[in-house]
Image (cartoon, rainbow, N blue to C red; front, side):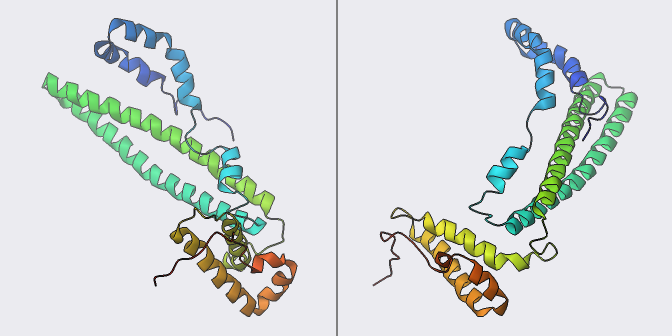
Length: 240
């Protein structure tokens, strides 16, 4: 992914145009301090984190506890990538609307006879231009994350699972994820937490045993995945 031209995501014109306004807002000492940081703030604007880094994607999102199989990780990548693509398309609509609003404001300013009304319109115009720069920055980072998900998908797609039907892997992957959650239950776990883990796990185990296509998977899986090894101190209370 290469950087595009400097006209996009360039916050310098906005900062420069706002210097006079900031000078009226801030006391001289604060304004001087802010001015001394101008180049640093421009650099911060261009490199600030907006969405997740690749490390966060691999470690936090695709963690082994929640997505214990290659297939589970792959299909989560599909979900994440699709969300970012759809949001990028929606952002493009908002961006185009904003461009039209900028043109309308420029036309109004050119034809406005009242100096105060023209001043208010100018403020709106500057705000729209700042929004434009922000949208361009967000769009760039959305594309970055879309590309990362694509690369991770390629790494995971090793031919060992069905990459056409998301349902195929779920009986195995969901049971393993629920097993991980069951192992984490303690005496301090709420009744709701216990039910939310053990209920789906017992159901998944029961359904898996009845599915002929699961017989091979069951034979390959560790026997304890078919059990519910919860700490003895974890009990489910019933109303007497």
